[in-house]
Image (cartoon, rainbow, N blue to C red; front, side, top):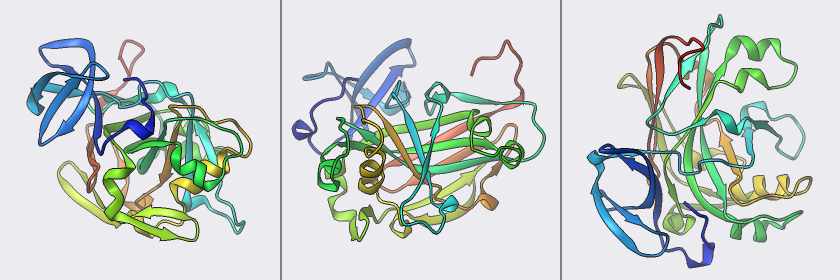
Length: 273
C-alpha cells in the first residue's frame, strides 16, 4: 500500500491483506461496515468478507522503528526512545517463534504511529500533519536478556507484531484530549491471554503524546514516510508475561484487536519467523 497524501484521506481504516484462497498476493484497501473494500490506490476493485482474508502488517517495511517507553522515563523533562529492528516486524496472522532463552518473556503493547511524510526539526504543529495513522503494536521481549544488557538491544530482537488496521487521526477527533504535551486519545484498551482478560487501561493516562514523540525524534534525525513510532507500554510487566503456545490479544477501542500467536515449541533453524 503506497502512502497517500494525508490531506486527501477520508476518515478510514487502511488495511493490507491477502485472500485465503490466493495466498502470497498482497492486496490493500479499507475496512468499513465489517467488509474489506479492495482498492487499486484510487478506485474500489472488489469487496471481501472478513472471514475470507488474512491480515498483513499495515506497514510492510518501515525505515525505522522508535519505541518510547514511559516506564523507563527518568527525571529529565524530555521522553527518551530506543530503536527496534524493522526485520522483526510481522502481521497479525503470523506466528512468532520463541528462542531457547531462560527466564520470562514479556509481550508489551503500544500505540503505533505511522508517518505519512518526513522532515527535520519539525514543530509540534508540523508533526501533527506528518502522522498518517494509528495502529496497535505488540513487542516481544526477553526479561532475562533485558536484565543482562546495559542498553536495550537483543532482548527486543524477538518479534514485533503490528496491525490489524491503520486508522487515520480524523476518525478519532471525538476521542482527542488536549494536554500540555500535545494531543492524546481517550481510548479504552485491554489485553487477554488465551481468552482470559488480564488488564484494562486507557491511553488518555499517558504522558507522552504522538506529536511530542515525532517532534522530539526529528530534532536529531530526518524522519521518513513510513517510520513507525511506538508509545507505551500500555500495561504493566506483571500482566504481560507470556510463554510457548500462548495467544495474546491487545484491543483498543476504535483501533481493533491485535492477536499475536507464539509458537508452541522452541524454534529451530528450519522454522520460519
